[in-house]
Length: 218
Image (cartoon, rainbow, N blue to C red):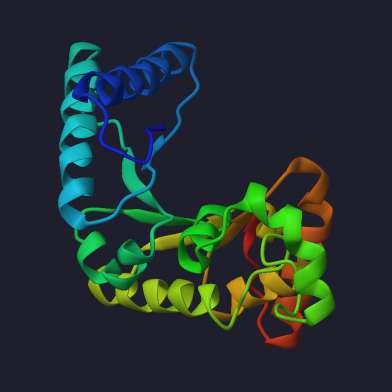
């Protein structure tokens, strides 16, 4: 479910939530049962998420109730892309049932860099060694990573079973995948062509950590 960086009319969220739950009803009638995860992006505060959460839940109850599927399970969570959401993740987790870190946008908002503009002067920064690597290709663990790690810790203080992962190109970069495993994420998501790399990196992280469990990749 997508909305812009500013507040959008209630009708847009209602329309998108309705499309999700009507699809759930349609596939259920064909014998396919799913547990949808409705993700609210660009959350800045728990109050903002709460506003959107109420809309999604209201539509879910209406659509599922009408279809006689009141017992249908679903989850409502958020994408952490704004530093404030990571810093107040303990509050955000009172509403969100899962976190997905949008590390592309979190890198932009945390570093004050536009991804599109950065390519115009990236060569200068590389030559001056201002960054160890392109922060949009390799997760900046010293800065952005601290926000991620803090958000994971705070979120699970509120909701111990909180499912957490990342979405974006960092999810297919080996050192970034290892970092995600180390801070306790459940999964990484990336472009299809990066999935094999992500799976290998997740397995290697599990081996180096002496654990049999690996993160899910998608």
